[in-house]
Image 1 (cartoon, helix red, strand yellow):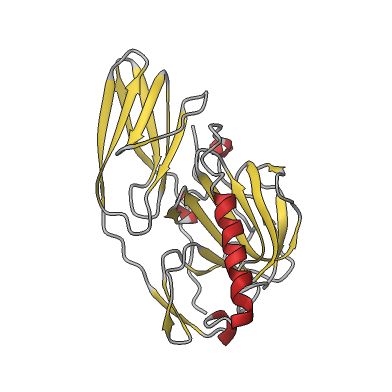
Image 2 (tube, rainbow, N blue to C red):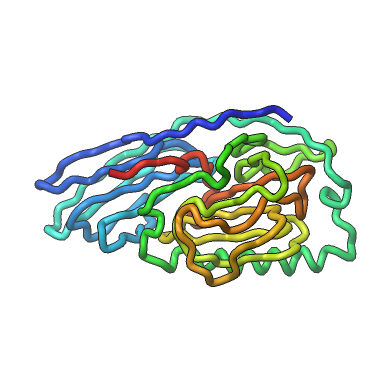
Length: 273
């Protein structure tokens, strides 16, 4: 499998001073990316028509889906009644095609497994429905690598063709590693669900980092956390495995901002002032 090197970045995207108040945005404005903002005396922030959550320290986050395009409007209102509007024009992003051979049952599940798959999908949906209920920016502690030696074997957004059948794009990154390699939480948060032996996910953990930002860790051999646990950045949450729909030991790391599919490399090693 082709090895893809990972690019870490801390991009200072924009900073402006308005009425003696500074708003700083970090990140990269592109499809599948997250941006983080911080400012003082903010009353409200809107991305287009969506009102964003703001924590007590003036931090907020927003992201763009894999297929996002066009111009988006960020509107910030301060407590003195003044506002600032910023236009964000997203560039077009290209994705690669990946062809894989997997067990037939993972492309065409047996009829006797369909109810199980539906039930597991409902569990994930219900868990994700809780994202966005926490104002606190647990992610404000920054981001860390999920595995000490990062070797990405499949990048975000790849169009996947399994056994010749076109499937949904790859909504995460795959990190190759030996079975049993420790897996760490990329930031602080609360475990929305720690699932065991799911048909597709295998053993996995879904973590809420606050304000709608989540990360998910799939195909684990072993879990070290349970649903409802609070975790810290860099805390061990499990071990690399090959459970669920997996061709070899690896970690699938996915991220979302609400239902927007996010490339994890858009936040890994992002630095805050």
